Length: 359
Image (tube, rainbow, N blue to C red; front, side, top):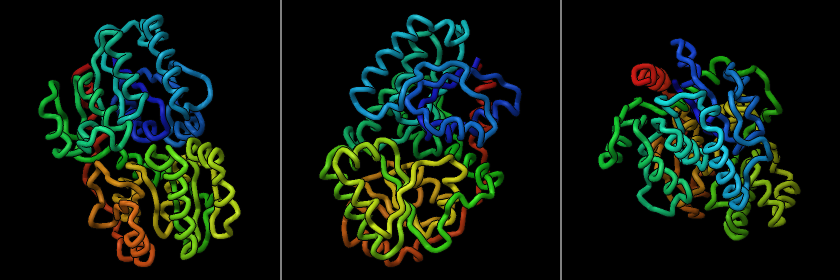
């Protein structure tokens, strides 16, 4: 049997096309939600016309702090040991699909091993080769590699990074995010959802390196305010970012700036509409880097480094927090616009058919 363990919005967006592909070929899957995120998860499932979770490990608030994360992981593992037969429907030889590089990724892989099941890692092989950057994603990936039996790699580049790990490597020829984006753009709701009619920059920030300290988040806010001097900004808040902005007394600066509109997170299809309508995107997210690459949208990455190569040297500028690079990008963002890519690939179908073969 196929089991899918997910916990975050980003994971659900990237795995939704895999679930759809499994449905299309008649392969049943057991959907286990870890509960790391809850807000907007129902909306994403509705976007992609998917069933809800078959089992929920946790029903509380979104996990947004390190302390809460440790407690949550511990409780989920204890629950798995106690209820593993019920969680995995008495399966003794199935495959547990996990995705990416979050704590839910490790949790799902550990749950599989505790239950004697095999692990398939989707979006596998990404590496920065810097143990603590990005933190904790790089450590999470490597631990998941050691626990995996099947590695679904977006390209041969990621496959090469897995040469020392045992198991079957399957190249999917693109990220499943491409499939998600194609669905969103083809059947997404035709709603403006408050999208500005004039030019604007779309900003979304959530990574540890940008919100872990008042100094780092103040730097981000200062950058956003300088951008807003040139182009109106729509700042979409992740919950951890919102919490940190409030705790560091920085949110008022954004709210009180007449050129900045602060918005809560929205469902995926609406967010894609915002990307399409924006002049450019400012983000620290790997998924946003890929989305903009596929859509040809200029994007400024507020990071020191990225383990992804999509768009670099084309539509994507890695800022390194360099004021001159940032200023040049904002002045000349039109130079980074590209035509949307049309790829003759369906990575989610490759994963679904592989699961059908090995299950």
